[in-house]
Image 1: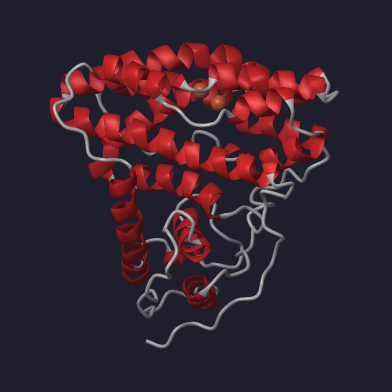
Image 2: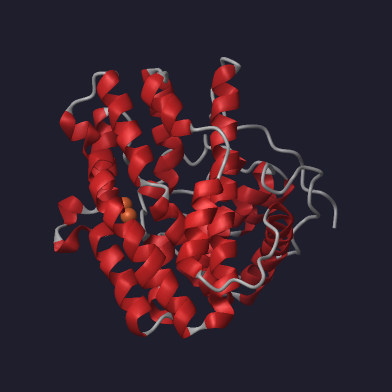
Length: 335
Ligand SMILES: [Fe+2]
Ligand SMILES: [Fe+2]
C-alpha cells in the first residue's frame, strides 16, 4: 500500500515528509474546527501514524517507526483524539462486576441498527459500500487486539489467545477471518488488496480503526483494549446473521456469505470467552483496571454507533457513504 491522498494541512505535511528517511518533523498543524471524530485530516494522519506499526506503506521507510519526531507528531494527534473520546464516553467509576456491567452496557446500547437495514433493505451497491468501509479493519482482523497478548498474564492471556487463534484460522491460513473476508470481497467484485479503499473511507471509518490502535498501542489502556474486544464480540453474532441474510436476499452464494456465517458461530463462543474469561478474569486479577474495561467497551459501542449513523444517514438521503476519492488539499497552515 502506498500513502493515500492527503485530506488537509496535517496529512499534507506528514505525507510530504514520510517518503524521505527519518528526520525532525515540524509540529502537527493546529486542529481544524471539525469534531475530531469527523475530521478527515486528523483521522487520516492518525491512521497513517498507526499503520506504520502494522504493514506500513511501500513508500515510507520502516526506520520511521520509532523515530521520536514521528512519535511526538502522533502524540499531538492522539491528545485531540483522547480528549474528544473522554467527552463522548464519560469515565467509569466504581465498577465491580465486569461481566455483568458489560452485559448491561450492551443491552442498553441504542442507536439505529445497521444490521437490520442491511438485512432487509440495503441494495447490492450499499452492501458493497459497507464491505469497503469494513475492509480497512477486516483485512487486518484481530491485529489491533493482539497488541494485548504480551501485556497480559495468566487466565486472561490464555482466553485472549484462544479467541485470537480462531480469528487467525487455528493454523489454517485459508480460515483466517481476514482471508474469509477477502473471499467475500472477491465475491462482490471488490478489490481485496490490503488498503485498497483507504482513499474513499471517511473520517468515522478511520476513527473506528484508530480507536482500536490507540488502545492497542498504549499499555496504559490495556483495560480499555480488553473492554473494546469484549463489546466487539458481544455485539457480533446476531448482526452477522443479519448481514448473511441480507447477502442471501441479494443473491450472493454461500462462499461469499461464509465470512458472516462463520462469525455467527464463532462469536457466540467468543462473546462468552471475552466477557467472562478475558475481561472478568483480568478485572479479578487487576481490579484497578475494571473501570477502564467498561470505558473501552462503551467507547467501542459509541464509535460504532456514529459509524452506523453515518451510513444510514447517507443512504436515507440517497447518497453514497464513501468519499469520492482523491481530493484537493488546502495548503499547510504557516507555523
Ligand atoms: Fe473474526
Ligand atoms: Fe470473534
